[in-house]
Image (cartoon, rainbow over all chains, first blue to last red; front, side, top):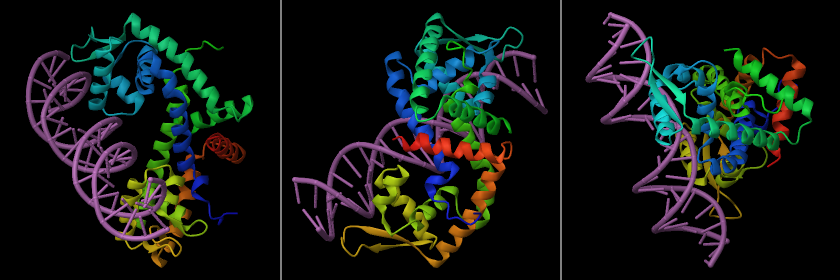
Length: 143
Length: 143
DNA sequence: TATTGTTATACTCTATAACTATA
DNA sequence: TATAGTTATAGAGTATAACAATA
């Protein structure tokens, strides 16, 4: 079947984009009461993970430019969820550290993320849902 | 394991976004020789599918605003890949119809899309790749 | 009155270039 | 010289509001 028309709704690009849109639709209303966007919560998750990271560490892991990261961290700092600390070994670097409030929001957000993902994956069996996540992970890591 | 930290790279939102980014990275260089972007090719695919569609039909199926669709169709028309035709039954509507050249580009693009998808899905078995597409389709249709 | 396409406009997201301070 | 963070700016991509033609 190598010459089937492949309708636009069967293209992976379309499916990935719309799965993402739908997930955002499900998740954002749940994040709103926490006072943060999904993006901001992703950032909190990122900077809470492992040893303290600089802005550029975070930018690299998130796949955004370092200039973009400046604005993202500004937002979180303005909300009092993170603070910038000069890195002990290299005074050029700024480590992004969660405040106590930031940690609270991150935890609450993690629970909400699970709920939103569960809603998105509802049409799938638990096994297929796990396979989906694994397949995406494999495909993304192949960078 | 309902309270596992769920690192940012395990979140579905992250995985979907980065899978999409990687697919675009793989596909765009292949589309370039055809003189179109992936977006434009998706539009050609959309308007080639089934009976002639109006701009708003296309906008609805693609999930974009009708004002956005105007600019998208403008691009394709400027390249000579589609033309607007007044709908026979309703003179307010504009049917978007592929030109012969548009049809050629669409066909060449479909083949290239398959190649790019194959590259993305390379780390998966054929069975897992098919499962991924099916799972995404199911999740997206639940709208 | 409502709908399709259009235009003007604004908003969001992101990156490039140039600057500063540190290394 | 090179790197981390920053600022100013510009470019995509998208949507809202208002308008013309048609229903």
